[in-house]
Image (cartoon, rainbow over all chains, first blue to last red; front, side, top):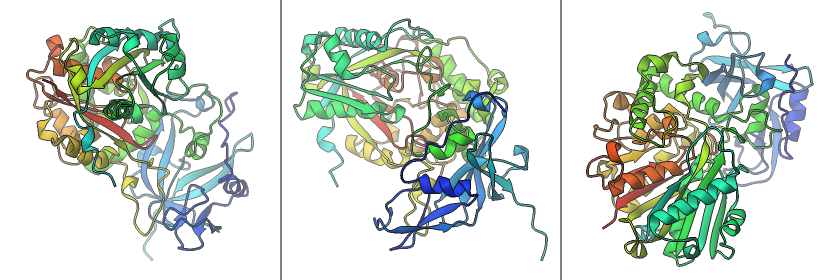
Length: 143
Length: 398
């Protein structure tokens, strides 16, 4: 572990509860109480019907790979020991148009391809920061 | 909705441009850089600081604001000023807004500047920056996803996966622009590079290597905006602002889901420019075929390819083959980044693209002059990080 502290999540008033849930290893989305649209990242208002009424719901925790970056030149000293490291851009299975970034775990970047199914993995780094990583799902055999 | 801003077309003109030297360590403050570039631009126009009643810049807490720079030059009662938040996405919006100020009579002569010690003080990569506060970044920073080079690498890879864009396609952008820089005395990098150099350059954030990335630079650049009528009485032939457009409001990450289908901007392979280009062209009554020279925001090689597509110079997905065909060379059908761009001249966040377009339209670009250039497109960062974009269409005035 690098001597430099990882950047903190810096939750805002809209997202604080999302980060608290992640600390409990739960991946939540918001659902509009009036029109039912799901949303992420956290905000108070629905972009479709502009309602401020909503609730948290548990997400499926699965998605599909859209793209990724393999970082060789650490842009922050806290990540120097981890480079090269891979961060995925994942489309969540819960709803179209919802995306989530996260580190790749359990696989090498060479095996990545678009639409690869991935599942959320929760982990906590040494300073207690909760992280949402993505692990490729094992190939599904015939039923 | 408005009428597309047609009342703005050709109401204002660029009458002067100015630069400081570009370097890796200016040794002076951003206030000094800004003042020096502004005075150069005014001298170029044949004006003085006492003629200025408007002053505008953009910054992300990394430069000298108008309320410091104005008084430093003895301009302490501007009729109009703008201190816009943002980087390359708003670089051209600042000049468009100065044109609005002039067109409405809020100001008669405005100076627009960008001054930044991006190499010696405020490095765009965010190295050693303090904690993260941005809306999107809170979800990204804990994974080490922090810098524009990484966000653009994600988008570039999506383009490669969708359209077969290759590292060689990116390389054509870098190699061509370096060749152009050889004819630009201001360029920080003028030594020629070949495709092998590009492909072998140190990996930064794959698919980008070092030669896909713009140069962090200390420097400043300024332009003088005044009415098209007044510009005709000044020192140089005027360059008319035929159209200015800016907008867009989403990053690919913070897209707000609004229904059963993903929003259009959720597709990483298309930039905000695709939505902006139609209204930019409509304002000027021009199209991509009318453009003689294009100065396209090149924070990374790939942003040139996606904008060649999104501004209509080639079909979607064909940016790579279009660049590889030689079309974007000085001798091609659409010379692009004639000064070497941010990849070779230096990175002053967009405004040096505008200044190069002005030189081309005045016919004073020397060895790199595009013969008979009368219409220039110049563009800002195409989105993906701080969302929107901005662009200008400039025409040689008479």
